[in-house]
Amino acid sequence: MRLDAAFQAERHKRTHLCPLDLADSLPDLWFGPNNIRKFSATELDDIVDPVQLTRFNPNWKFDSQAFAKFSWLVVREEVAFNCEPGARALPIFYTDFSADLGRIDPYQAHFPSDVEAALVAVLLVPWEDWVEMAEVDWRAFRIPWSYTIDDDVFTRPVHPPSPDTLSWESQIYTDDEGEDVEVDSPVVLPLDIAVSDPSMWLNEQTWNDLCSAQKSPLFQAPISHFFIRAFATDGVDSFLAHIMVLEAALGLHDDHSSSKRRTLPGRGNPGATFRVATRLSALLGTKAAGENFHRLFDLRSSYLHGRQVDPISTEDRILARRLARQTIKALCKLALAEPMLQSRDDYLEDLLDAGLSLR
Image (cartoon, helix red, strand yellow):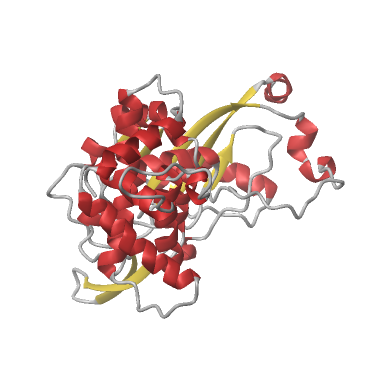
């Protein structure tokens, strides 16, 4: 019966499990088809179905006891089948080897698309203001991988990850008999959320607002792509990705052509950096925002063009993250306020004019 139903099915469900490595204690958060919470080992087993895993490989094990010590971002999606059962069971036999297999997708996703959509919402929370050790990391957690469970019987499960891929530390405590006992516990980045409630930033309303805003022409550029990349990479790559969020959000193609960009009253014909900085000042309502972008962009240019670059300070790293987050939040607010907006180019040109008064 189940096999017959699988042949007849037109849709299937996927559950993506994303461990929040290094996360401190967080309240349960629900937004759209996604949630953040801890699970018991039994609850994880109900999701993963370890018996099904062993049918494919008796050596496969999802260590629910160890994974239950971590918080998880869980993303659920229901999608229509786009291929026949044979292609789902043995996709290698249906691969078109005449295609250019070495081609580059410039916007290749780091995580499954629905996970990235959920992660954008999560990253709009001001974690950089809540972490207690920003010099260690502005992120309150890391997501080293996502593990996908598909209810389609023809789709082969993937090898379950090991708890060793997450961060552990040894701790010693004294038991009731006075003996020292060593146990492994998750490493935690301390988080101070006493000043705010995460559920005020991440809930059904904020999720629905984000989904609506992203339909606006203001989000035609790959803003979310670079926002995710800034989270998923380290060091200078993360810093550069945050700068690229600002350029993608507020830059126009014509900004880079002296013959196509328009002359500004009393300003001549300044280049793309001036225009993005001016729009940023208007968007965030402060002259300092544009000035900060100019300074951070100069750091970016020094690095790319081989000039002497001093280490990027914690302050500047956090500032780049904050400006990127605030920019996306502000664009969401504008998109919701003007749902009938037709032209991104025209709006950004108007924003440029508004920002000139702050320069």
